[in-house]
Structure formats: structure tokens, C-alpha cells
Length: 168
Image (cartoon, rainbow, N blue to C red; front, side):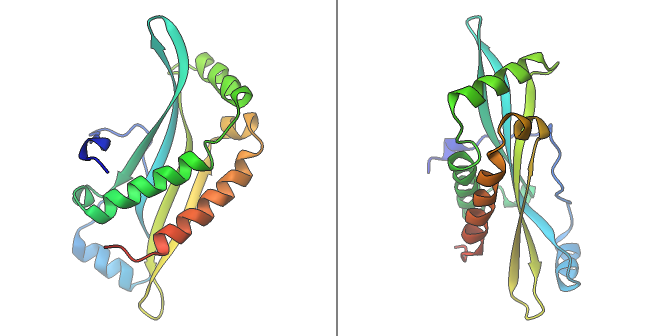
């Protein structure tokens, strides 16, 4: 995967539930059974204009702890989770894309976080890591595409399988 596939964005418009904690706080929390969000993929739909012609574009943003930015494991997970979103939830026909485009055109900022997929880590009673996958579909997206709920279930399943694999 090329290095330039990642662009670091300092300001995130759609705040994830990631808490910035010290390593000691995180370690203590894990031992006490807390669950921590490790990564969140945000799928942003937006109306963009190119030479006066507007179209719907989709951008994928990953939110995770800043210290993990250079981790090869994290880069791999960002890539894989983005692929999961792209190949499940965001597979839609032209009619749905057109309806989403028109909805976003009418919004003031012409942008919407259509979908979020997050991976949470906790420690089981046996000391083994446990992954939990959560997601959120924007109500506008769900209203325009009723089958997105089914595709999101598949995205959660695939993401859980992928996160359960041991990292390198």
C-alpha cells in the first residue's frame, strides 16, 4: 500500500468517541474491563463542484489515537476497514446515489457522515483481547436506501473477522 494513500487531517468534523489517554490510564482501564475505541472509519458523502458541475463524492476518514499513526498494523487495519465499508455499505445503485446527491445538495454544508464503523478493544476474563464492532448509519442514508441496514450487518461481520486476526 503506498505511503501517500494516507493524508493526516488535523481537524475532524465528525468527532469519534476515542478518548485520548495516557498509556498507564489505558492499561489500568483495560485491566478494569473498560472498552476502548481503537479505530473508526467515517464515510463522508459530499457534493463537490468541478468546472461548475456538481457531483456526489465519497471520502473515507480514519480516526484513531495519534500515537498509532505510524504503526504498520494500524495502517493495514485502516486500509482493510475502508475496503470493508467500500465493498459493503457503500455499494449502491445509481438511483440511490442520485437521491443522496439531491438530499445533500439541499443541506447547508452539502456534506454528511453517511456511515461510521468502529472497532473497540477490551480484555476478557481470561486476559485475551476481545473486539467489538459497532456502526452507525445516518438517518438520511437509511431513509434513502433501506437495504443499507443489511449491508451494514455484513460490514460488521467482516470487520469483526478482520479485527480478530492477530496483527503484525
